[in-house]
Image (cartoon, rainbow, N blue to C red; front, top):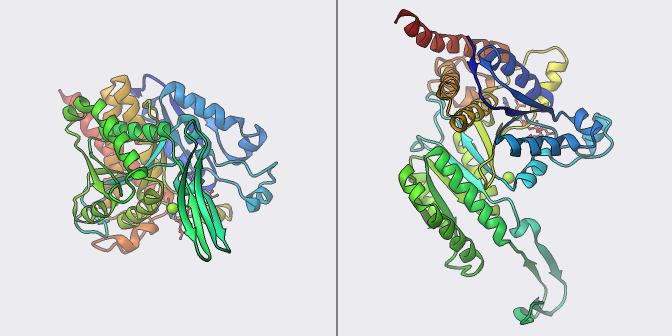
Length: 408
Ligand code: NAP
Ligand code: MG
């Protein structure tokens, strides 16, 4: 008998090889076991083009309504893609549209497998990076001075203040950046929600000793939001600490992991790639969008795996790693089960995760993991073989439980 999922999960379909994997996962690892109401949106590039991208907005609204979404990787079109798929225009990144609509923060979380050890030996648990995705140098005004100048910052408010930036004797360069209280507060709240959801410690780091006002402002808002949720954090055993960014960078190398590290925009850009590389393959990296009001959207951190798709179109088998996409599904299922109070749904998701880990740990791996395995694995498998093996392992884990119940 299938396990009943009480409330809907919003499913966002995508493009290319990621879409191929998506359907295999759904048909072979989800639908045979779960009676699940899926609210489906096709975010494949053709469907976005046909609806003038309205489908993306509709999907974002549905995620807000139902609280949990799961998304397949999608093409963000550029000029080349416009030609390739004969599009009306280069539509905006669906992720950016959904993130803006939900006012969300993206967290990247690695999947840890015993025989794919992180490059940093001390890392035992995931290090999750939360990157503030608004403002700073990403929405800055820059100016290049080719002659001497006096540069001032003019604030047109009731006080009409002017601040001298610098008196340039020769050439130079300037930059003015900003951020918003509302955006920083949303970011802090999303980080607190996610730390609570994952039961991991929360770090926020900046350089407030140097940037007393700008970085200091971030630190202050974080502290205020943490104070508001103090009891909840204590109850969950989640500790918050503020660290100077350089101290945090050193501490993270020495830590075991199990931390959500919240970073400002630029630092988060760097640290997320650094930590991702430290954990190995993109095929083992998941990503979650969390809104300040507690809406969750899960996905794999990788893209549509374009090169593999072209092979697939030629009729060749590919050794694409579906792990992160499977974990997007299990992340959504666990959250759905938690919100609905249906423990059997959470348990199923945990078993599916275990089945994937058992598969890899037994030496059945896709090609991308081969260089990182310890002990080394000589032979890799193709996508269909990998999924089949996961299903076998899942059946085994489910069988243990049902077998136990049946004999009782
Ligand atoms: P990609 O899909 O991340 O793949 C880049 C390379 O990484 C692949 O060619 C492959 O290397 C390896 N790789 C990534 N995921 C893998 C997996 N699951 N299993 C095995 N290998 C994996 O980036 P892309 O191919 O350059 O980008 C394609 C499209 O994805 C772009 O149109 C971009 O807009 C989109 N994209 C979407 C998202 C999203 O929706 N969240 C995120 C990023 C990019 P080898 O070729 O060496 O095997
Ligand atoms: Mg980057």
